[in-house]
Image (tube, rainbow, N blue to C red; front, top):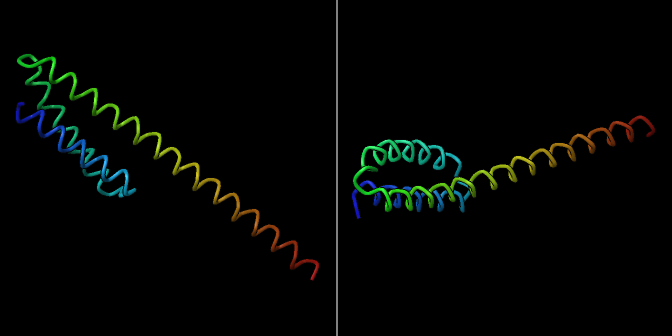
Length: 98
């Protein structure tokens, strides 16, 4: 296995761990590392296309998971903010009639 592909796999594993822990700072840093890895892979792709393609497809799967989880987290925050807003409005109405 080439050094570049090993780097992608290590970064992918770290990205999965950061995602599991919802460590968004680490996800951001690892995203930058993934971008650098992909640049290096493109240079090596001519020599080892099959292995490179497989590794990149697995990395793409991690990014799909990341997008799904981040979208879910964002929706959860939106829902929570709506509930807070509704509670504030209910409290205002309550204070008007008390």
